[in-house]
Amino acid sequence: MQIDFDKRYPVAATPQQAWAVLADIRATAACWPGGVLATQLDTRRYQGTVGLQVGAEAVRLDGEIELLGLDATKRELRLRGQGHEAAGSTVSVEWVAHIDAGNVPGSSALAGHVTVSVDGRLAQLDKRLLATVGDRLLAQFAENFRAAAAAVPAPQAARGGSARRSALASSGADSTLTLMVQAGQAPGAAFAAQEKSGASPPPAAPPGPRGPWAALRRWLAGVFGRRAD
Image (cartoon, rainbow, N blue to C red; front, side, top):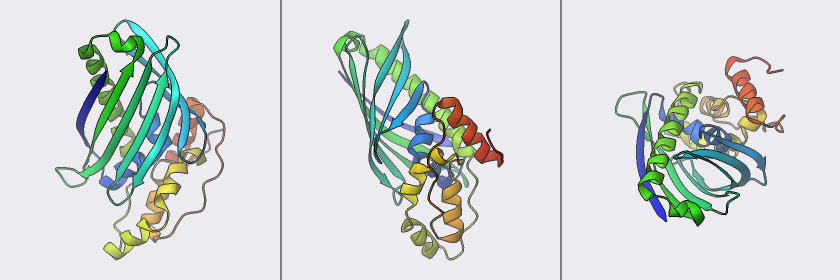
């Protein structure tokens, strides 16, 4: 069974702030309700789990997501994920998301296309039920994404216009942002530094303790400038 979703959600944050979250794989994953990234396999692949409620049943999926593409010019992220449940079902996801300018100054929009393929016993469920579950999860993700984007430090207006933006694009923003949360920084901190100076910030430090609470503490520490000990 295949279900497709085309979604667009307004975000009360600038495109730069929203992109800083979307470009950070861990920050984006943290916005997914019931999702946890447990292990980074390499620069593009991560293992984790996601829990979801399908009707009266709680379903846990264990699997892997892969970063297929990160385009700073288009502000576009491409991901592929696959999860398996103990009863034998498999859920595969292809997601292309991008950040657009919003309808009012200082705002943006999170838009994209999601294709979900389901087999096994879950594929025997009513397609409308699965579509409703998908709509609900995407709406919850969007709410969490809005909060994360609003927490990103707003970049100062860059001097030099397009020349400064070109310096940012060539300074390794993508790879730096992908590692930010592991270093305990607030999403967007590296982006703001590059936007201001046009130079790459120092390499991210190795990740500290793993787990959702540890990640949240490191994130909040980055936002408020305090240690998360």
